[in-house]
Image 1 (cartoon, rainbow, N blue to C red):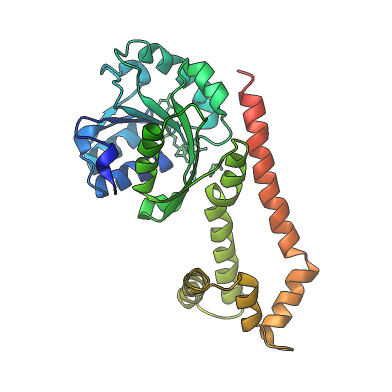
Image 2 (tube, protein in one colour):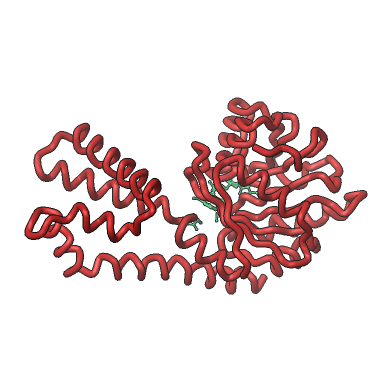
Length: 286
Ligand SMILES: NC(=O)C1=CN([C@@H]2O[C@H](COP(=O)(O)OP(=O)(O)OC[C@H]3O[C@@H](n4cnc5c(N)ncnc54)[C@H](O)[C@@H]3O)[C@@H](O)[C@H]2O)C=CC1
Ligand SMILES: O=C(O)[C@@H]1CCC=N1
């Protein structure tokens, strides 16, 4: 990780230490960040205890308990559910007012929540949106980022450094594209896991034992993904290379075509995109 943008005094405060908060904290610690530099506000006692035990970070049970001054070097990562965002922001806003400097950079990973709404609730303009995904847990995530033109390069680099601790990053240049990022890569691991489930259970139905079916399914997904990754050719060309005329793959792909599998997936991803927009509209009314 390039820690150039995060000096020794920098502190990162996570609001919410659930699935994604935990993945990001773990990635930062693996990449040279010190546990003394990380604080987490986590309302669930069992989750708090695990974070403390596993990472040795400071854990507070509510935003009200934050007693440190947010300096310019600090970053706050909002890793709570979108539905909790408004209420938590209002409390956090009171804390930000005590900052002796311009206050922290706030990075939100919440789906749907728009910058104009979070800035309004927090009364704070220095905000960036990021959308990671759960492979972040093993350092193989990808995060989409968006910032308004008013956000300077130092702050962009700061947000990017945090996200790069858990994988790759891409920037989008229109905020509405954050819903597309959410639909493709934020939610994407769930589609892949659903596919894996289907491949494994189909193998079992055909008589393979579950260990063998799992091994075949997982290795196939991993191998095919690596092959596509390392190839300059379009995935469609790689698909054709598997598909012998009149053979087994053609028989399978014919069924998928009849069922409009491709269309169904497109509709599903469109639904995720639409849900992000609707959440933004609905929660933005607060
Ligand atoms: N799970 C995923 O694959 C991804 C989730 N996201 C976004 O990340 C955010 C968090 O999602 P997850 O980590 O999956 O949810 P989660 O439910 O695992 O984590 C949220 C955590 O916030 C805590 N919390 C709730 N209210 C709180 C409060 N007032 N103060 C302190 N802590 C509080 C909860 O106890 C919980 O541990 C969401 O906004 C989601 O849209 C983004 C990318 C991927
Ligand atoms: O399902 C959700 O709303 C979140 C955002 C992306 C992945 N999980």
